[in-house]
View 1: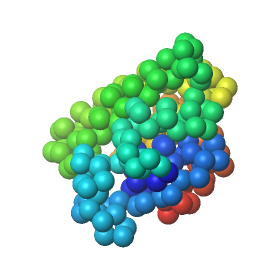
View 2: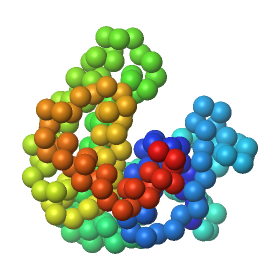
View 3: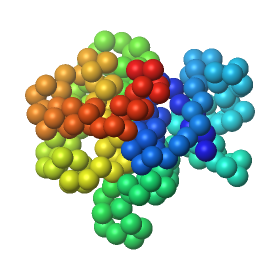
View 4: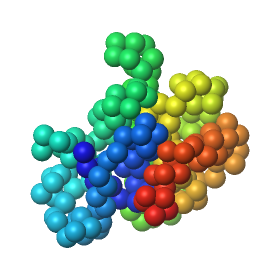
Length: 195
């Protein structure tokens, strides 16, 4: 399997899930400005959407979108709760929330929106993170065990630091970020992405 990634992008979540579970992936770096891989191949030919994460599967097909990639890799590594369980549905709920309410809220910050729009985006992100803070009652989103949305949330919290979204008033999330940063799979993914 190949993981098409861009360093520090949301594709890092899948990279972490794989690394945490000892799943070897061939890593292919993508420049999201030129839409070319590190070998010069046009990325739109691989994924017409033009963004990461993209998994190149052994049968030649691709799988994209964190809502699909994270459960897929979680199933491969055993970090996704079993099919049909309420724990699985709640894990999927977290992936959906992080994807639609947190990830997408960073668009104005990443794309150089005017200052007032960036301020509104930061306010919205902090509001969503406050909800997450309230729900984070264990070491991880689903309690005591790592699951795929933890990797996604960690990536979001790294973005907060990079984009000036101050989470110092959120002690549970601050501790969660530090706990995640200390995990072997996270350290491996960071090193492999050159971060």
